[in-house]
Length: 368
Image 1 (cartoon, rainbow, N blue to C red):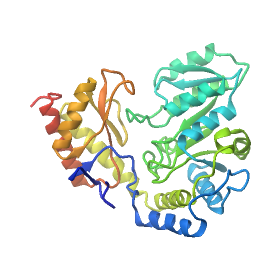
Image 2: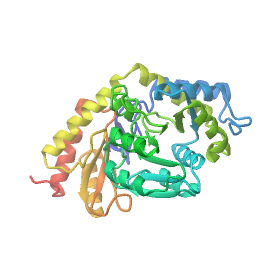
Image 3: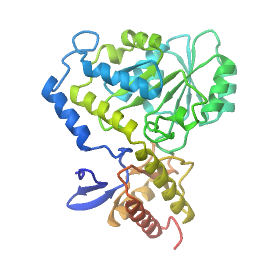
Image 4: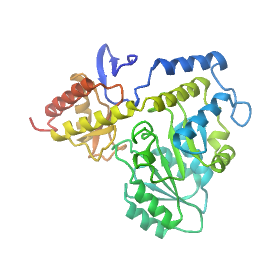
């Protein structure tokens, strides 16, 4: 059970420092977000009672979509019931038989599922390898639509897609570029606006997509782009057209959280600073942190058994670090997936670093 406005949780009677949650902005349980959700419950009740195309649309939905569009730097946006639904629905609405979708080897499962369900030809390219994407595009059928999809920040490794290189390759072949900002919103960029912000606004993508359940402490997914794209998705994205609308409380919570993020960019700066500091401490001690450059930090243990043993040792040291094992990751790269949030104080990061290193020495992941 989480403590309100704290990085600690209570688990089986123990008070432990949570280091594997996704509340990147530290807004889970924020009183302003909770108050907004309660006010929406009082006004609208517990559900929208319909699909958006019929009786399910509320003024809150339109407010939230306007806020998402503004935050994403686009003219329009559409909110889905989940990030999974947004990915599956968007890919299915844009692509079909005769089209080609090119996806990064490490793209999220929702992207993979959307591609497979679309009926388009699916081609994978090596992780963050723009040259390999270039060769894949050269070999693809130019007759249909070609759509390249990447995660902005990869949730298992914490690395960032090389957007400028990917954009250059897509432009050379007339391909569209779509990014999933699930782990980027509130995490990268000077103001937490994601991968375009991270690269200084010099490169734009054709379709931006993300979630409202990680840095934003609610539920739902979103797509932002041109008015023509959003109009098309409203009537062609099946998970949007045939699913009940996002609930009022969730919509209001997401709306308030986005407004707080805009007013309080220091939350982003804190998370970025403390993430870099923790990576430096752990790497200097010999821990393997992969290619992480964000708030997501993998602590690579090796085998599945090693990851479970390491997680157990961390818990005994007072810290929750949750294991990720095969088949989610290769069976030699099992790890604890750590996520730094704005709720982690400098002192919390010091405590976590000591616990991770103590446990790593006990498990012989690093030397004494």
